Length: 390
Image 1 (cartoon, one colour):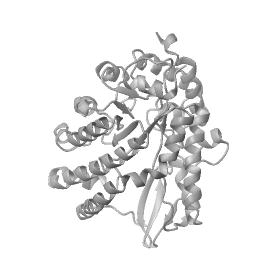
Image 2 (tube, helix red, strand yellow):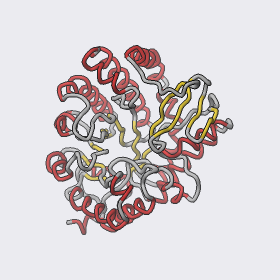
Image 3 (cartoon, helix red, strand yellow):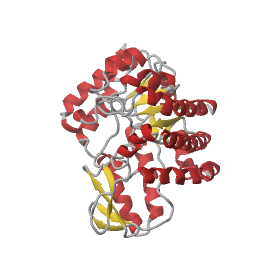
Image 4 (tube, one colour):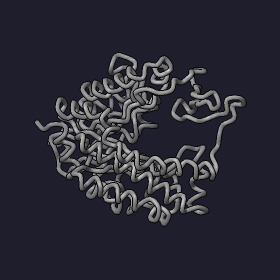
């Protein structure tokens, strides 16, 4: 029987292992709570719990629990490709909890979660007015990143020390592969997005500065992760709506693609793989996105906007596909039987010939029904034997 690492590696090389590997995504509460039998700090739903610990000065406990949650979920769920993420700081300011969904660090600006706790916004403390960011804010943001980039590059190895022991345990004890996401090439937060998109037309120099400095940070962080044993580095970021990309194909080609390719090639030279991620309809930029970026794998391929058959036929022989059970409609709203059927269909469509690591289409968010996640998970092991698929 192959190890999880061997399964993932074979799929990345477009070879069929003994069964289809799974993973690459985070698992949030309430699903993670049920699996672990304790309140989990992983995924989107863990933010509030982390804040509560930090408000009591328990920064170290939060970090320790996140490590334990990632490792225990990987063990219990037999995850082949385990995602590790940056830990919160060892020490720092204590947030003041104002309500179930609002907190502050300085009393001037409050942070508030909306949209089912999936999005964090900033509001003025006195008025509650939601803060929107303009061009001057964008320039200040980029200048701040540029000011700190050399230090970030120099301290990348030290910064990853927090995760080195976790990666080693996952590799040695579980014999699994590890993925580490590095950066977002797009300011998709709705309070930044209008200004960011406008800058592509009015201030292209700012966009180039942003992409350049973000890629420097990402490459430094990715190289440090690879040195610690990480196998796959995540790059990219959400840049498309359901109807198409947020920018024109020529702007993607000019502003984004060169830095995706640069990061991929840097990680390849270190002996690792790269995986790009964005939901939405990417077909207008598909050649650049899937092929010219020189990535090894793609995830967050959104069902509906991205036809599974078209993606497999056109790109499945060139890049490994990570997904693709619909994390919204299917895992959030359908029945367990419907989930099992979709999981089976996805395996039958994407797995033959290799180049497939199955998972949800994005992440196991708080909106996913635990019973549906478990139905997907059981179906992966029930139908994922490659001898049966053929």
